[in-house]
Image (cartoon, rainbow, N blue to C red; front, top):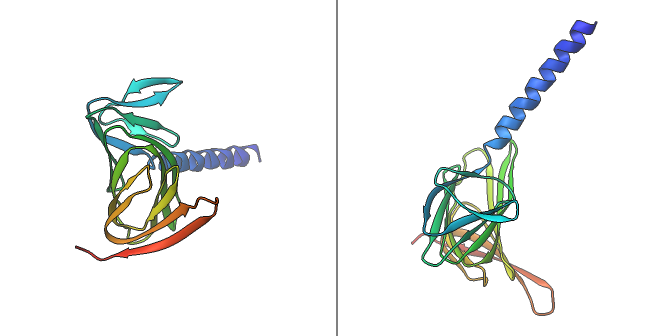
Length: 174
């Protein structure tokens, strides 16, 4: 009886470990860092290194004449100079893959790749607006400007009276 319980415990531990290893694959990798690109770590700002893996909750900042390129599952986020970006969410399950960032200042360009077997969602929140991408490319500024290159963006704007307005913006290729 004790041997069966030990084997069951071992199997459950291995399954949990495998699940945690799979969850770690939902990180974002730094593929380029030009100029002053830093992340906040333990209350201090430290330089970001090319090849470094960033996880949920990481706050990165780019300086004057600086930029960073981040990659995850074939999708790319280009962070412009004088930008501050927090990785807010990196969720994946059998049906979907959701990524969310908070752009406090500056601009980003995103090229989000779709998946044949999963719903892919990428959301950029700013202090005044939210833009959601469903497999497309475009740019978003912290001031709420959205430029799309193709497909559909859904934007939510906070009005002066505190209410929200949501609009789907279809953009044809080219």
